Amino acid sequence: MTESKMLELAEEVLAQSKAGKVKWEEITNTDAYGVKFPDIGLGIVRISGAEYLLQLRDIGGKLLDSLSGRRGSEEYNMLQEIYNLARGEALSVEENIDKALNYLKGQ
Image 1 (cartoon, helix red, strand yellow):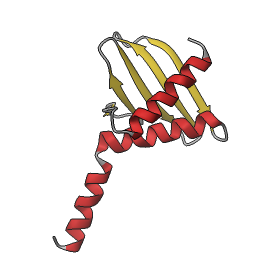
Image 2: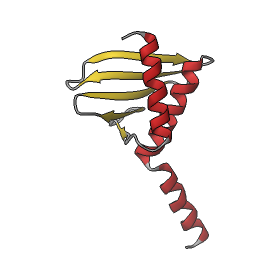
Image 3: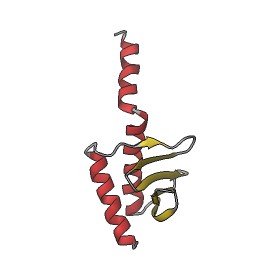
Image 4: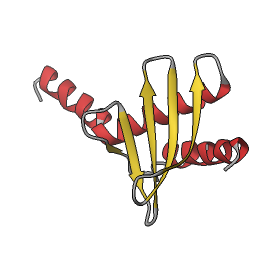
């Protein structure tokens, strides 16, 4: 796949993630989140705070293509946003913040 197609894929992943249509799951013991489709999967990985990586894999886990973004690039900002949305979805961050607030407020 060309980089432009991976950029198009990343843009669509971002749009669908913002709309709540992508059901991200945590990838065990890593700084990564993934979603599985019938015959492919996507993963978003944070490699330190300076780089993010969107990966497209086949059903067997073989890497088909990827898009990376280093700090300061447009890709970085887009991939960082995807990562944050994926993390929030997979870890139910909003719900857990609400729970903590309720405990603190005595409700």
